[in-house]
Structure formats: C-alpha cells, structure tokens
Length: 155
Image (cartoon, rainbow, N blue to C red):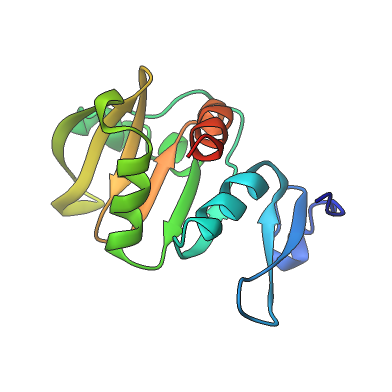
C-alpha cells in the first residue's frame, strides 16, 4: 500500500517527511516518519504496540557502552532512530525478533542521565544499539533502518 508522504512540519513537531497510518482497531491515525513506515506497520502486524518513533538523523554514530563516551556524545545518542513501545514486553519481543544470535549483551550503562543504569548496549550486525528498558525504547543508528526493515519483513 502506497501512502502519501507529507513534508516536514515543524509547527507540529514533524522533523522528517511522514505518512499517516491508521492505528489498528481504531479510527485514529498516527503520523510516522516515512523511513519508519514499514517497520511500524510490521510491528503492528506482529502485535507489538508502539507509541512513538523517529527515523533520526543520517549520522551512523551511536555511542559505545563506555559511559564517558555516552555522556560526551549524548546529542548524537538522542539523534538516532528510535521506537518507543507501550510496554516492556513489546520492547523485549522486538529485541528477541531482531535475532538473539546477533546480539551481544554489554550490561547496564550508568551515566548522569540514567544514574540507575537502566540502559543497556547491544551490538546488532556490528553496530551499537541502546536499549532503554525503563522507558521501553530502543535506539539504533539511522543506517540500521534497512536491516530492521528486512529482519521484520522476513518473520
């Protein structure tokens, strides 16, 4: 299904071109960044409930698990692509479906933005992802979007 792509609209906090997608089982529509469209559609088809997403900037960088590195590069961390899920189970299921054999668990990260250390770093296909379990968010480099799309489509 081809959806109309709308231009960014800063007044509505739309930083990227977006599409309108009907939320399953509701009469409501969500505005989803164009590059995340297939990912979100597939998440919904798999029964994963999402709340927000962003395709991020075109920077390939995501900080490594070194907490000093993460603190120094928080802006880069926040400009990555991300998906916020409704609950912890949806986030965990998404990560499980991203193929556990490709994930290297690096443990909790502690930094000034998250003193309890509820972030975790994982490596997927050689690129660092950040998994924020307490916020039900997964962040990944923009260049990982095609990998996420292909992995979800193959399920």
